[in-house]
Image (cartoon, rainbow, N blue to C red):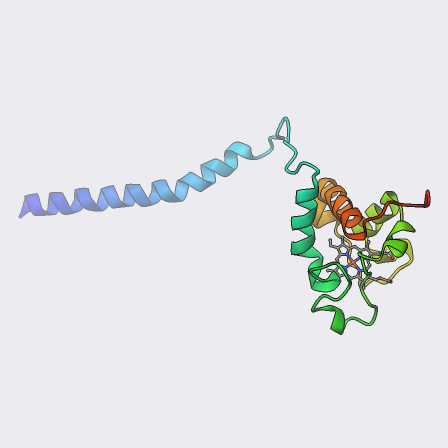
Length: 147
Ligand code: HEC
């Protein structure tokens, strides 16, 4: 009988110890990083046209369309038609800095509709630069103006 109680107590203590260990682990992990600034944050993305293509498909096609022609499924519901990125005349009138500002800060920054959202916080510089490489691929054009 006493042995039985001893076994039960040991089991209980063992399980209690396991639970407290599990509860303690994440807390001690948090304490470790708290207040410490990482010495070097590695760049998450490298600028590349492949990255531009995949970012475009993920973030831009609902409005600008899978082909980039401005006919995304969401375009029907917008009062202002999304730009046609395959229109080389239209796209060549915008240089890369202007495209960057538009994507980074949104349409309103370039006196265009607020229906073109700002992406800077979500995407970061590398993915925006990659998007511009892909936009130039879609329009098969370069900027003809310096602004
Ligand atoms: C919610 C819909 C929506 C999404 C998503 C969207 N756009 Fe737009 N975009 C618009 C609309 C609407 C316009 C047209 C604005 C106007 O003509 O006033 C526009 C215009 C533009 C223009 C042309 C601006 C100019 O100079 O006239 C560029 C470049 C552009 N978008 C890039 C992008 C990129 C790159 C993405 C993905 C990261 C994206 N957009 C995602 C709605 C969207």
